[in-house]
Amino acid sequence: MPPALSISQCIDLHIHSTASDGSFSISQIIEAARNLGLRAISITDHDTLEGSLEALGHFQSSSPEILSGIELSADFPSGTMHILGYMIRVDDSAFLNMLERIQGARSERNLEIVKKLQALGINLEYDEVIEASGGGQVGRPHFARVLISRGVVQSAEEAFSKYLRKGKPGYADRYRLKPAEAIEAISHAGGVPVLAHPFTLEAESQGALEEIVVELKANGLKGIEVYCPDPNPEDRTKYERLAWRYGLLMTGGTDFHGAAKPDVHLGVGKGDLRIPYSLVENLKACRS
Ligand code: AMP
Ligand code: FE
Ligand code: FE
Ligand code: ZN
Image (tube, rainbow, N blue to C red; front, side):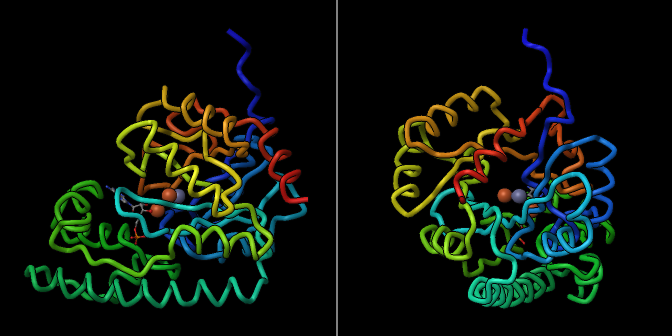
């Protein structure tokens, strides 16, 4: 067996903060990354650059190295499609305007969820959910937290499987960008668009996944998140093969959310993930 990669040469390019649905603030994430000894990180909050802005504003000059990041939800018939964007210009006005539109649609969706839960006899007010979000963007995990604190459910998993997941009685849909729009928006803002955690697409076969990747690449996709806490770790080889075949970059991150996903740890995922810094060098080379 080759020697394990030293953590000081490792990275985590998929992290959520309290700016979206993570439970760690930016300074807590930076402190945890420093304690662990990670070399580079990216804060990739859902549909907002606020987390990246704060990280770059306060911690840019010290270690770990910080890359700006975001995770956009895209409209896709099966499963969930998320497109990560790295090294975006965080002051790009067209990009920020687009995020405002998406955030407006999210707020409308959240009010729909409140109505649906109330109609089910759950006595919950939107203000409580806003409070649970700690001032960041409100998402379904914050609804889950309120449902837990009310004793309606015992865990986030139960909140999603009983109420919040697609097809469940508290679910409300929201406007999402088309995949090509998400990719183009990231590219126009100077960023590198990457397909996040391919397994959440729920593709029926490797061939089906390949077709999706080919179409995304035709739309300007530049990379695939190969290193992630995948439920089937053996699938990593399949993602690697796709990256090689289609000339896509490989990236990696844990999708750390703190308390919302307690079994996933910063930098190391479920414990054994080690993501090499060379991926950051490739990302930088792709943009320059
Ligand atoms: P939203 O963006 O508000 O629609 O919320 C989606 C977020 O909910 C995802 O990014 C995950 O963090 C979280 N999530 C989705 N499914 C589950 C689940 N089954 N259990 C816990 N959290 C989940
Ligand atoms: Fe999330
Ligand atoms: Fe995601
Ligand atoms: Zn994520």
